[in-house]
Image 1 (cartoon, rainbow, N blue to C red):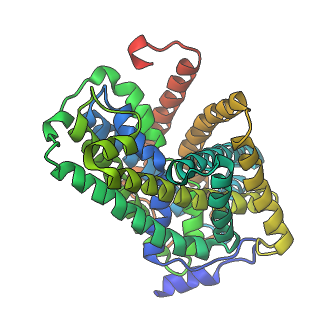
Image 2: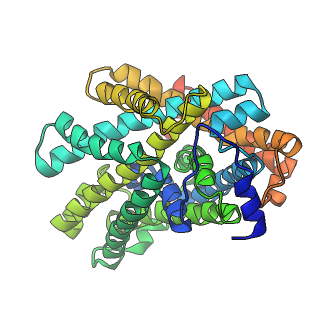
Length: 412
C-alpha cells in the first residue's frame, strides 16, 4: 500500500456506509456480475437481422462510452472522503434535485431488474426441476438475500466464485459451438446496416451498471489506484462475452433458423448437456446480477435518506425487505401492464445513470474534498463528454419514438 493510499483511507469520514475490503479479483467479478445477465443469451436473436459484425461494432462503441462514464464516477469517488453512493454524490456535487432524480432512476432500474430476475428464476426452476414458479423463485431469492444481508464483502466473495463458474460455463458452450461439425463461421459475417440503429440501442443497455462503481470504490479504499484498472478489465471481459456468445449461436444456425431460446438451440444442436448448461449459466447470471443490484439498492437507499448505520439490524432488515419483497410479489401477480411501464421507465433511468456522471465529475473537480489517487485522462475532455451526452440523448429519443410507434417498420 502506497502512502497516497494510506492517506486516502485515513481521510474516510465516519459515515452510515462502512468500508469493506474487496480484492482486485472480487472487484472485477463484481462488475462482470453486474453486467452479464441472462439477456446475453438473447443477443444473437436480437442481432439476427443486422448481423454479428454490426453488433460487435456497437458493443465496442457502447462499451467505450460506458467505461468513460464509469471512470468519471471513479474519479468522483476518489475525490470524496465519505463512501457515498450515487444519490449522495449527486446531492453533494450537483444538488438535491439531481440526487432525487438519480435515486428515482436507480430505484426504477433496480426494481425492474429484480422483478425480471425473480420471474425468470422461477421459469428456470420450473424447466429444470418441474417445481411451481413461485416456489422456484423463492428458493432462488432466499440465498440471494442472505448474501446481500452480510454486506459488500460477502457479495464480493460470492461474486468471485459464481461469476467465475458462470464464465467457464459460457466459454464451454462457446467453444463447443465453434468446434462443432455443425458450425460455420461464415454464417456470422453478413451485415445489414438498415437494422443497425435499433441494435445500437440494445448494445447500450447491455452495459449500464454505473451504480456498481461507488460500491467498488467503497471496497477498494485501501487500494484506490487499482479501481480504474478493475473497471476497465471488468468492462473488457463483459464486452468479449457479449460479443462471443452471439457469434457462437449464429455460427451454429445462421440467422434464418435461430430460435429465440438460446438454451433450446444449444440443446437441439449440441445435446442435452448444453441445454442444462445454458440454463445453469442463466441462473448464475441472474444470481450475480441480483446480488450487485440488490446491494447497490440497499446502500443507495441508506445513503439517500441518511438512515442510521447500514449494519444496524433494523435499518438493514427494513431496507432489504422493501428492496426484495415488493418485486417478488409483482413478479407473481398479473400486473403485466405495470411491469411493462416499469420496464420503459427503467430505460430512461439507464440513460440518466449514463450521462449524469459527466455533470457530477465537472463539479467534483471544483468542490472535491481531496486530491484523488487517480484522475481521468483525455476522455474527460468537455468535447468527449458532450459527445457522450449527445449519444445518450439520441438513445432516449429513439426510445420515445419507439414508444409512440414513430419508427420505420423495419426497425420494429
